[in-house]
Image (cartoon, rainbow, N blue to C red; front, top):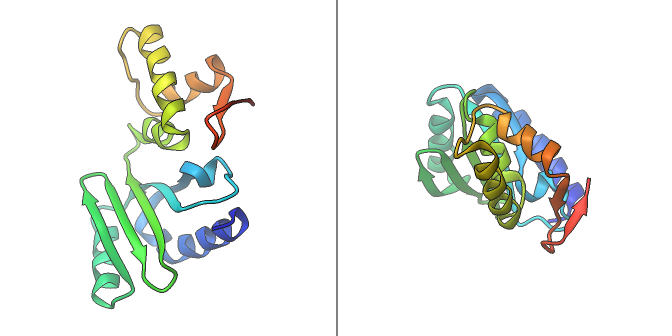
Length: 151
């Protein structure tokens, strides 16, 4: 899916689901503004179990298929569009860490975490501490070709 179409789709889906979240943000290749996006990824702080109830109701209506329901991840396919969506469920204490772990490529996250572990002595931090450190002490992001690009 092209970036522009993905952003429109995200806005529309957000309008449908915003009552179920305290916080909603884009992540993954959409946040990196990749040209071609295979999965729409979001990090959310849900309002208790209302989001799961919404997904179950949509599944019963035949509007989506739930691929994965781990404790902090929901992978779904919207049947009509055949678009895969991933929701990373967070709370106020780990939102920044999950955002960091899901925004960059796997290579970027792995390399930055190695540096963070050296710098912090093994502390992963909470809220936006790790995310803030990665942008101030490691002024690079990874593009889709895993080549460093300056920010």
